[in-house]
Image (tube, rainbow over all chains, first blue to last red; front, side, top):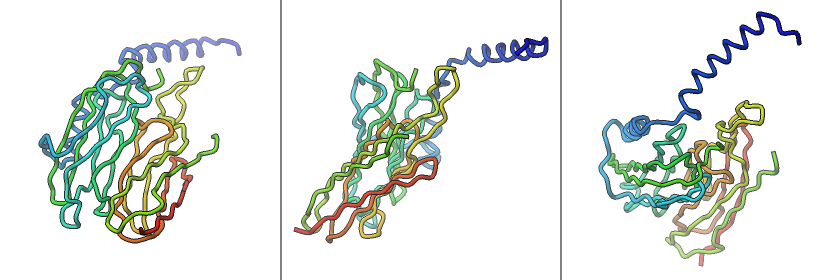
Length: 151
Length: 108
């Protein structure tokens, strides 16, 4: 296509915008504050107490594309007192949400395992909410040698 | 997309009241939306966003899944078995596709 002055202008404005956008290193990472805001939102407004829930994550993840994590919450898991859900957040990923596990008394135990992506070394946070309105959390730092966000 | 295949491991039988472990895997690229192709264009997000496990029609366990879950999502969880019956597993894709699998369990 012929390069008109108009297309040159569009191209250079686009490139300038691209440079400005690129300065905020992409993929844009969530901040620790974004993650804590999500934690508090899930917890219903207040910072949860540590304990009762255990988050297992490796200290060092060789491959950020697939990091095994598991959660376990002490709970009788009866109709009157059971863990309703556990949400997992990562404070250094492009977005903090990872997964929410929703349990029922038929779960037997409030425990679940999955594999997640970690873009870089960061904290993984697990928050549990029970049917009686209690909220707990656990946090682990995972060092990542090869990031898992495709770049 | 290459065939999306679920694979589920459920014990063949359990004693009444026993809590069993269920392992599930589904082959799926879980395209996060973060990757770029060779021309620098973002590859659109396409993930499994919901997983459900039911037993004899009742919900036992579900997951709301975000792009930070790894490709070929692996989910391991437990279920308390009080009677014989059928587990039904469902995975829902962003594009609306629904994948399912079923496993029977007997009482010892």
